[in-house]
Length: 495
Image (cartoon, rainbow, N blue to C red; front, side, top):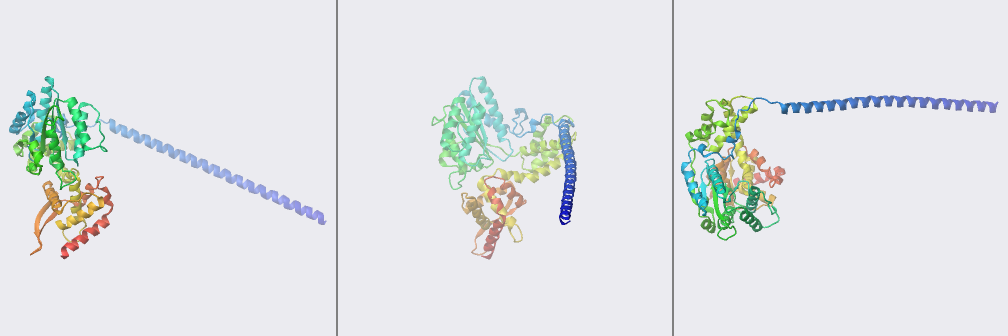
């Protein structure tokens, strides 16, 4: 019995174990089926979601294509090139520059007789027709020389964005190479400036019988070292004597364009003697001349696209900006662009006023982009004092601004100017309307100093300056900069 009982118990246990195992397997099987079903549902859901995303993307693409294919309303412009800043216009459209035009023609006319024309200095405020006149005359000379089988070359660069002499020479090489369809032939870095000069002369000798170098805004080509001879002085010296030294075999003329009436005062004596230019002065345009300039470009727009008061209003705004024709044309074009953006069929007074507001808002920041590196550092340091000062008011004492300037140049490992040069650069910025300056006294025995006050937002100016890749490393040090500013302010006011 005991054995049978044991067997029965064993059988019972075995049977129980078998039944339990089967139950567990069945449960696991059901669970697996459930998971599989869930996975299939998820997969189906994900697939549907993916299809929805694809459908959405396709709908988005179709929508973009629809928008691009959409014709929209007719533009207010008929010939927009007439109000583009770099367009060389017909002489019939030139207004109020008869004397200047006659002077430039007479100076460059010897080219047509096979003689070397004199060098020229075209000076006057911005937007008064300097580039316009010399461009119009040289374009005609190119055509006349071509008809005679003469190869006359015009090598024109704007010096505003160029920081060094080496960069300026490379820009000239690039310009000639592009004009004649040749290889530049020298790398931008890694070779001497002398080698770049040689390549420039090679290209000119191979392609031109005579050449004029047009150096616009030349006064901005200062170079890195403020205490050394300015870069523009060295460039003028080399180019103006290249024919006499036989480095250029043909005839060479140099036209320097500047807003600075005292430009020649900073040129080295050798450069002044070699350059020795004929002067052509360009005064401001008056309101009547500005109005006529705009009327002469009226056909940039469709005949029915301008309200009657648009041209007088644009001319009035430009006259307030010291007679700058370039600003008048920019505003004229900007009002048309605004009308197009809104789908309006006519340019109205409201478009002009809104465009002027945008120009006023952005002008100072755009000017910052064209400053030399040293001027940017000077402005950045000065703006930092105005921004981070814990004292009331935003005026910046020049001794404090200079101390902060020194700190910034150390952080950037940049060349450092004297205090006098720093003050000179910041004072120059007042001509751009970025700051105002006043002379202050520290009382008996304390001496005099300059005080700078920003007319706009110093923070916006600082943000624009650090967009320059050479200065962006300073942008992440605001807390340290703030402590430097206030330490220097405290030291200045505690004396």
